[in-house]
Amino acid sequence: MKKAHFGAQVDNNGNCTFRLFAPHIQDVGMTLNTKPDHTFMLSPAEHGFHELTINDIAPDTSYSFLLDGSKKFPDPASLWQPEGLNSYSTIFDHHKFDWKGDNFSGLPIHEMIIYEAHIGTFSKEGTIHGLISKLDHLSELGINTLELMPVAQFAGSRGWGNETVFPYAVHNSYGTPDELKALVKASHKLGIAVILDVEFCQHCFMKDFNAAYIPFFSDNRTMAWGKTINFDEEYSFGVREFYIQCALSWLRDFHIDGLRINNTHSILDQSPVHFLEELSFRIRSFENKRKCVLIIDDKHNSPRPIMPADKGGFGLDALWSDDFHHALHHRITGDVNGVFRDYSSPEKMVSAMQHGFAYRGQFSEHRKRVHGCSQQELSGSKLIIYSQNHDQTICSGDECRTIKKAGFEAAKLSAGATLLSPYTPLLFMGEEYGETAPFHYFSDNAEALPPNASNEQELDLLSFEAPDPYDDSTFTGSQLDWNKKESEQGKFMFEFYKKLLTLRREHAVLKEPCHSRCQVQEIQPGLIMMIRNPSASDGRYASIIFNFNKTAISEKLEAYLPKGPWTLELYSAAKAFGGDQPPLDKILSDSKPLELAPQSFALYFHTPLNIY
Image (cartoon, rainbow, N blue to C red; front, top):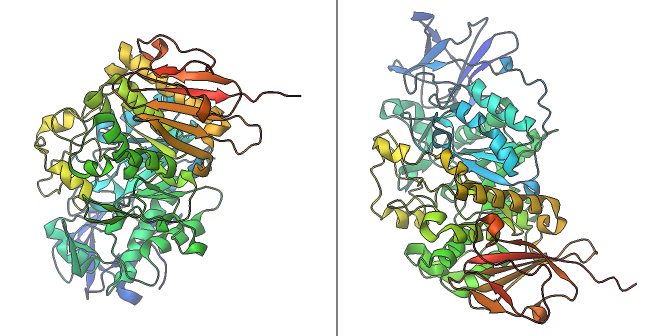
């Protein structure tokens, strides 16, 4: 099958080629707002496509399709819907943006420190410009990767973005396509990569547009939201290519540095080559001087998608590990509701810290099945971990953030467990200064579905009494309050995060992504020690001792550590970070026990003895 674009594409000479995949349609007409009384007819092409080229088309011309004489439809591959979900799509010329000076070549996954943000709630403006104004904040913090929740056009003006209607188009309430490009260019100037969340497992459409999407949906499979995307049935070749070209458009036309594909466990595909494997191959073929990462959100704990293609995998870069979050959440809060009861065993936190997954082929009581699988060890950078993210911050009431659920010291403990691990860390917007605002599910689209309705974990959360998603206050109450950053506690928390990220960036042992060089053990209930081994032979170990108990704890550590001086680098309960505890000794004593405050941790670096 010919690998060509979908939708309206303008060439360097101002000519525009329109291309629609509609194998079930005989006649495809098109109208332009500049000639509303004239119908242009597209010519049938092979494999169910219809094409038309119009020379010297005026910029910002709007167009609609007519399918077998139907009423007007917008383009499923529309690049721009300035008036939202109306019947017209608008031609957009990607050649006009000035990328001069943008020489950013991307980042490999093992270097990334990811910050997840939602454009609509990140700033009071709720726009791309509002986010651009805060990029210096991210740079000062030490973030090198910005992950945007979905920005593709959805119904209404506010929402999470997961109800995607036009997956190629920038949501009109957030800004224009060129404004998104300006965000990417400004981020690159600060050395920050940009990753975009995309929805390729479900596709929302307005009922009036149904005729344009018939081949896109399976005739045999359904999920909680309805029919699944057709990745392996009749006409699936066009559907697969539609989403692959969509991915390439974000990377090529917007200089996006990577994609996170949501809910990939819901992509049902029995083709000889799975859609994710084909997507990975096509993205690798696209890569030239710029690195592009592919991340997935898969609830199966399966390493196959992130294994190399020559070992039977799909060749993706990384996946989100909810296991780490769930085990940490239980340790911090004691929560045993829903899925969290599966993580109440002490070894689950140790396993999550040691392997990235708490479940690697064990039976899950909550799921009533075996969860995960025992496979060869992968690089720690291939697992993305977090103490908070957009999914896990949805809840009832206001106690959604870790700092609200468990307090200031517990929030710092969660940050240490995440940022000092051998995995790729992700922060959720606002946690770096102790934001307390919830991140509820919100929408002004009455047809929208609850978030991730296919996910077994989130279904537990949705059973709580949540605020009305259509009430304005649910949205406004989820916006960040940047004044909190200037509070005394906010300043302490921000400096604490900066210190952790500086340590991770500057000390080779803390950047080491190999979790076989990370030994974790629970030396007494609630007291976990993590020793990080350097790949270099200089013996400069790091040791982090976490006290997850709500009471102080005392323990002699000599028997657990290599010989030699251990120098204190950071104590989360120190006054410098808003704590009220007496300082720890600068050198770890061999003769007296270490005393750690409740829900705190201490980081030590090892200095080998010079025997020469």
